[in-house]
Length: 278
Image 1 (cartoon, rainbow, N blue to C red):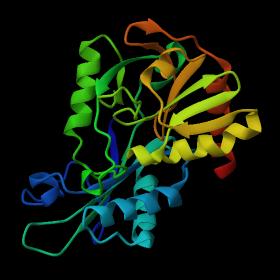
Image 2 (cartoon, rainbow, N blue to C red):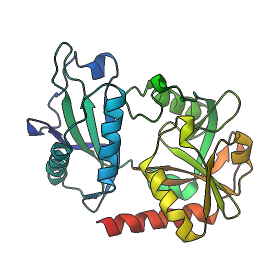
Image 3 (cartoon, rainbow, N blue to C red):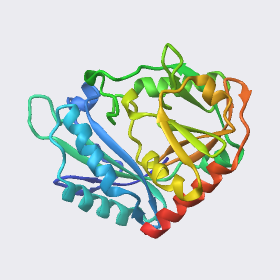
């Protein structure tokens, strides 16, 4: 993903090659910062307000003052105008700022989309199940989008070392949680299954959109605590996230999962919702 444009609160547009974060910012020193990433379709950010609400909640959970939503919108508009491309990824970061100060930073980045996404959507992805943490205790920051992402990235690397494209986290007693940057879904008949938020997983904005779209396409949705075996014997499965959208899962821990119609139908419905939003 190539950085196309950068805007900073109090400074406006900044050259993408100019350093904007201090070495003693707590985002660097301790990974204490909140962020959001969303997809922009034909120049219009999809579900922008939902992402700004979640950004504010993440900030509150890690002890940061939420950014001013109007400032975020203005910076996003500036950065998207500068980017010169209309189908991109938009990122918001709220950092604590320099140590010993009370001056948080707001950064807005516009990036190109990952080039491999449509190839992955065509062939489907392979998942490896890895031990995760059921983040139900509030100090574990379940559902918070923080920049402390080292474990998530290590999980992706471990999955690749096992010949998979991505990971799915499970508890020590085999309950499905989420992916490093995705929510997970599967289908049996006309029912869709996805882990419930009370497991401490992220309330994905695209997850919420799929919950809204599914009934109109004839699917009932069940949220709950489900063992990995339920996912393994599904009629089909897929992941959801804002930038990746819906990606069919075709293999779990070396065992094949059939492709089905729900992922394609809901992917098309998601794109339609984005077009209407634009």
